[in-house]
Amino acid sequence: MDGLSIFIIVVSVVLAIAFKWVLFRKIQHWMDQDLIKQLAGGDDQWLAALQQHHQAMLADGVKREERHRRLQQQADSGEPLPH
Image (cartoon, rainbow, N blue to C red):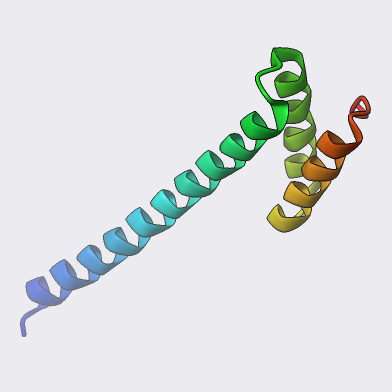
């Protein structure tokens, strides 16, 4: 194999891994938004509050499973979200 073939293979593999990572992140974001919309139950104010709470947890570095658990607890309690 010559240098050009190896270069093409390496670039292809790197691009495939990057594409898979981006797609995975997009799907996770869609899943998070679907959960928030489901928990809001069509209430726009509650939806905005849950999204704001989710963004705050993202900024704090809370892991995804914990974010989902906290959002579920917050929706179950029906109490206003801390800001």
